[in-house]
Image 1 (spheres, one colour):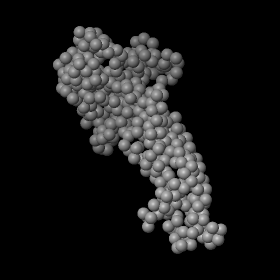
Image 2: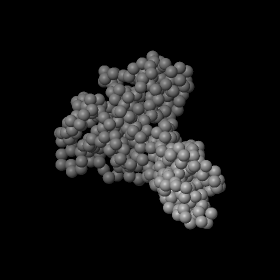
Image 3: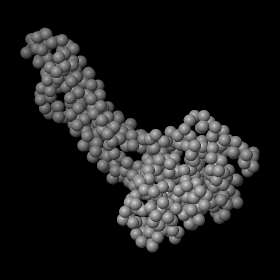
Image 4: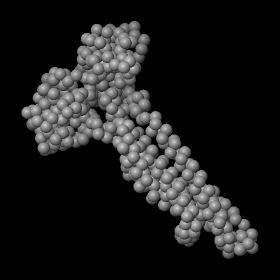
Length: 443
């Protein structure tokens, strides 16, 4: 019976072809608009490190003394607090090692070249960090190794670079044992990693949130970076005794909060124990006695992204607008199909008079509506790709991530079939309630 009704539905598509084509185009436009915005939101809200991010936490202790009200950016705009800590606190937490893994980190910039000063790559993004960052964040090494805790303590001038930078500098991916120059200091390459670019860039939101092109391509001990004169570009506040004026781009490494501190915990009791440890650490700081504001916090990746409002509001707004447009398209398609089905009232009446039950007539027309929307889904696929391409042409920092992955590609056709069923119910019901006696008499 289903096969027979499907055959009738396919024949029905050839009746009144202009109406059918208009319905297919309307569905395609609504689906393409919705899937374009949903695909972008899907990429923006994806897990940045699948399998790892649920075990990572941002630890924060506020030990900045006499944080003054005149700490501001150069244009006087209030700056965002990225929950960075002072170097002394980071070193104390690293030494205590109360987490499974832990890493202090800071984003830096420098010109990178070979030791001879050749093949200069200007303005490269670096990540100054500690030895456990690479295994903790799952940076995949193609050649060599990461540095050890002993090399951290020795402030060794070593680095891990990604394979793209190695190819640009040395013409080969295997650059282990060679040397690079960061500004004026030579570092020995001990490892070569694959491309590492989590989206969003959750561990360094002070640098960027989303980007398909920006990424750190050099990892090195942050202490060695300081020795090389590579200074952090910003902080979350400085002690009143910090050198110089406290502005957005002036950082005193000893008295400013400029290091993000991430820890790994694998179980809920470990998280609770570490939170208690942070609170206890804050209470033991003499400079914090009598302070009323919160002294210590521990944020999961999801909590941190929500707190920082990483997903742009206009991305969510566009989804609602596109969904409203799809609903409008569905209403119009339902009207078109109702008109199309009722124009075949005589045919439906004859079929009913010959013994076809209402259920069979209803199923035939629901299937016809579903096929119309499935064809709309097929047409919506290239239109969605076009919409995503247009988004990528816009320079908004996150739009270059607009891609249609296999999950969303399958979701497009699931949505098309769901729309077909929803759109077809009312027109099919109107067709199934046609009185056969009146239609046969008029025929």
